[in-house]
Amino acid sequence: MRKGILIGLIFLFLACNQKKDVVAESQQDPEVEKKEINNPIITDVFTADPAAIVHKDTVYLYAGHDEAPNDFHFYKMNEWLVFSSTNMVDWESHPVPLKVSDFEWAKADAWAAQVIERNGKFYWYITTEHATIPGKSIGVAVADSPVGPFEDAIGEALITNDMTKATDISWDDIDPTVFIDDDGQAYLFWGNTACYYAKLKDNMIELDGEIKSIDLPHFTEAPYIHKKGDWYYLSYAYQFPEKTAYAMSKSLEGPWEYKGILNELAGNTNTNHQAILEYKGKDYFIYHTGGIQPNGGSFRRSVCIDELFYNQDGTLKRVVMTSEGIQK
Ligand code: FUB
Image (cartoon, rainbow, N blue to C red; front, side, top):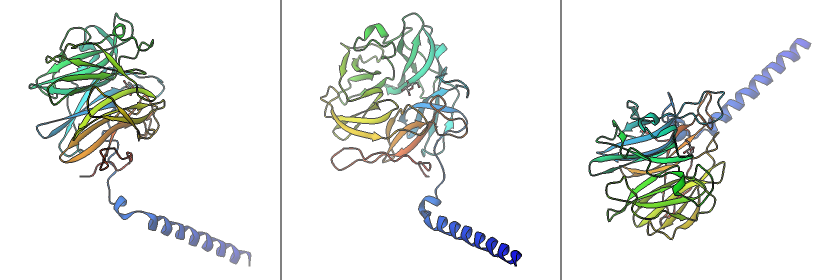
């Protein structure tokens, strides 16, 4: 009799579990199920602080290299990396194009950076710790090819901490973003806590005029300028831990109108550094998370990409971060 009850219970248990599996299967979106998991886009090294350009139909993605071991709870970053792709899914890794040690005046920290092309040359604006002037600095490297080799374009920093006074912190001169306006005028934006900007001379290695600052709600760092149609967009890391917010303007000189949150907190990291790119008719939001398994985190980040969509009035739709990312 007892044996009979036991067998009955086993059958009941198996039947319930089978039902659960069927429900789980039927809840899967068949479209999602068919997709590959493409985020993060690079899985053999940790990558952070993405920036990207298009050159001759190829996307070049620049990133800092997070080298911190698992038991290390701050950034360990000595070099920047470059990858290329023609479909936003398959990424070719190139030899290391730039290191902190390529700048004689620098001593540590390959923090956020961005490349821009002008007159056949590629200028790479980087953040690093200055060896003799306390605080973070911005330098410029130059190359004839988007994958380098890059070399220091000036022989000294372009921006040092003693040049900016809007805050007392020593790390307010970080995270450069560079943009060349339709009339050929180049601008550099950068900052932490304060968002600074200045014009650049045509040679791209000297400031052209005073450094100004912009008031943006809860500005933390990582300004990024892009343009679509008549609108300029200034996206940035908002609060800490960071979301991404953005403002819009009809001019790089402002006024900038705050438009709200663009991306929520990125998984398992306190930073959320973005780049925005248009390529082959689609718009992309490029960012990092700390979600890679195993050992991802705030100091072991990985670059991810999802599509970005605009509303009719030019405002941006909230980014949806996905594991699937971009599909071929
Ligand atoms: O990668 C070091 C710093 O973390 C960057 O400069 C910031 O934007 C943040 O992502």
